Image 1 (cartoon, rainbow, N blue to C red):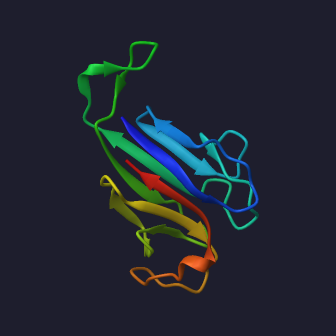
Image 2 (image 1 turned 135 degrees about the vertical axis):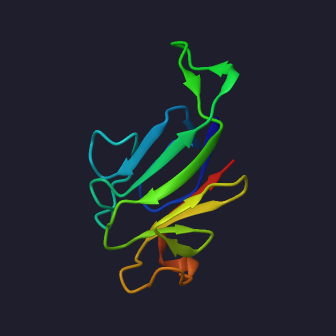
Length: 125
């Protein structure tokens, strides 16, 4: 199981953290997103966290297996997805990584964004 702790949430009030229990967790502005971010620079489907593996001893309340490793994918939004401050298309998530969403329209892939441009910052553990 993964957990995203909220470090920075712009002007939106978010829970302290989000448990990642599914094999696909969507992040975006769409009301159907698993993690809904309301800033207008976020795409309707901005990013996805994809789980794999599974610990046979860890199950959801419904009995479904819980993923044991995760990767994040940017879904093509103009402002991008940032892992540890670097714009990515996709990357494996590791304990302690930070995921950022912000004003990255002019930031190229593999470039670093100044933290002040990030509207949301989430900590993966």
